Image 1: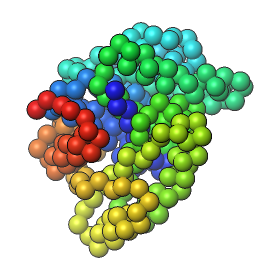
Image 2: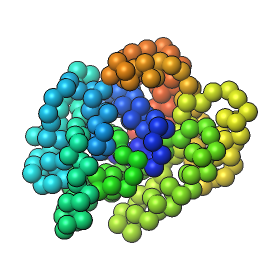
Image 3: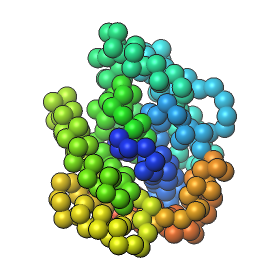
Image 4: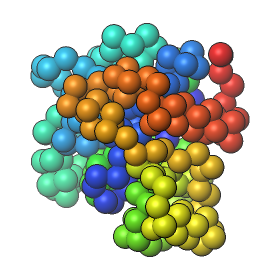
Amino acid sequence: MKTFAIMNRKGGVGKTTTAVNLAYVLATGCGLRVLLVDADGQANATQILLPSGEYAGLGALLRGYAICYDELTVHTDVPGLDVLPAAEDLWALDLEAAGGNRGRCYRAVRDMREAMEEDNAYDVMVIDCPPNLSAACVSAILASDAVIIPVLSDACSATGVGDLVDQIASLRSLHPELRVAGVLVNQWHRSPVAEVSVTYLREEGLVPVYDTVIRRTDKVPESSWARMAVQAWSPFCSAARDYRAWAAELLEKEGIQYEG
């Protein structure tokens, strides 16, 4: 089972949109069994993919209240796509972890992954991380094969990638095989500043940059208001088509076999 953490310390760069649409495409277009883990206390991915309600979710796993993943994961109405939900209780987890539960908390998602691999429950796990190295975020990253970094085509996003890569590298003492799979340029539009930013990222060479860029379109914020993946809201818009192309690029580069 391949596991990807979608991470950036900056907010508003499209982490949740990327996680949700990647999971959606892998399930619907590639025939893969996908688990989306919502590790962000804002719970936006949960709100997009699941009905309103109270869920035990990731908080219960990290606190040790539940150890069986099938007690916590929730089926969506998308065949092949399940969610491990988040709730606001993740915000309090950092204080609790600082009080002595950090080791167990950091191992929790990795232990869950090992159980799912033993059961052959899923093909891919996609984790929507918060914009900080919280206890939930660290636990997610330590369970991942690789990190995917969504960025905007602006100077702050482009120049901030190096600092983020350094932070990820600092976790290799706990997870030596951890790597950055690539940078995904989000909300791209044809303009001089966008071209400069993308060129900078590609030429800087700190980490790979995906060939596919996700174009800017109003259909993405529309889909968030509708609480739907853009793939479901407007499947033929530019961003939806780009996410499908990027998913194919990701699977090819990661050597993941799929149907379709």
